[in-house]
Image 1 (cartoon, rainbow, N blue to C red):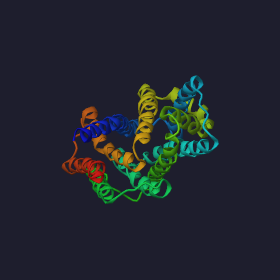
Image 2 (cartoon, helix red, strand yellow):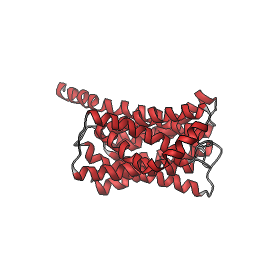
Image 3 (cartoon, rainbow, N blue to C red):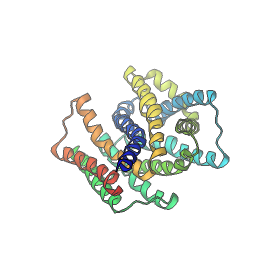
Image 4 (cartoon, rainbow, N blue to C red):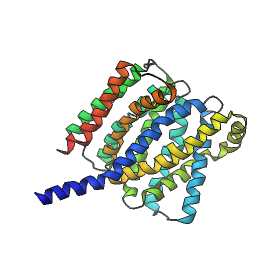
Length: 298
C-alpha cells in the first residue's frame, strides 16, 4: 500500500509543473483576446502581428545567441512548419478575424483547437483519445458555445469567423508537429526557435509597423508590449512545457478554460458582468476539462 501511495505522490509531482504551466498559459492567452481588440484600431492585422512577433523573435534570437542548440534537419523542418503556422499564419488570421468578431465568440472559435488536435494526434502521433476524452470534449465544446451565446453576439455568417477557425486549425497542426521535438529538445529552446522562425514572414511589414506604432496612442504601444512579454514570450514557453509533459490532445483540452477565464478578466478589469447563460457555459467548460483529465484515466 505504501508503494502505491508513493507512486501516486510521485506521479502528482511530475504533473504539477505541467498544470502550473497550463494555468499561466490560460490566463495570459485569455487576456490577449481583449488586448488585440484594443490594438486593432490604430494597427492593421499584419502590423499588430509584426509588432508582437518580430519583437518576440528578437528576444528569442538573444536567448539562442547565448545557448545555440541546432536542431537536427528533421526537427528543424518540423519546427519551421510549426513556426509559420503557430506564429505568422495564426496571428494574421486571428487579428483579421477579430476586426469584426468580438473577443468572446473569437475565443470560442479558437477553442475548437482541441478537437482538431485530438483528431490529428490520433493519426499522426498514435495517441489514444478514449470515450471519456470525447465526452469531456463535447461538454467543454457546448460550454464555450454557451459563453459565446451569453456574450450577446451569437454567430452570424461572417467570413472573418472562418479565418479565426483557420487560425485554430493552424495552432492544432503546430501543436502536434512540435510534440515529438519537445521529447528531444528543451521546451525553452524549441519555443525560441519557433518565435524566431515564425517571425521571418512578417519582416517585410516592419517599416509600416514602425510608422503605425509611432502614430498610435500610448495605450496601443503599452498593449503591444504586454502582448509581446506575457501572452507571447511567457505563455509560449509555458505552453511548450505543458506539451512536453502531457499528450497533445490532453494538454489542449485545458485550453477550454480560456473563455471562462477571459470572462473573469473582463469582469475584474472592465467591470463586465457575465450573463447567467455565460456563467453556466463557464462551469460546463471547466467540467469538461475535469472529465478529460481525471475520468479518462480510470
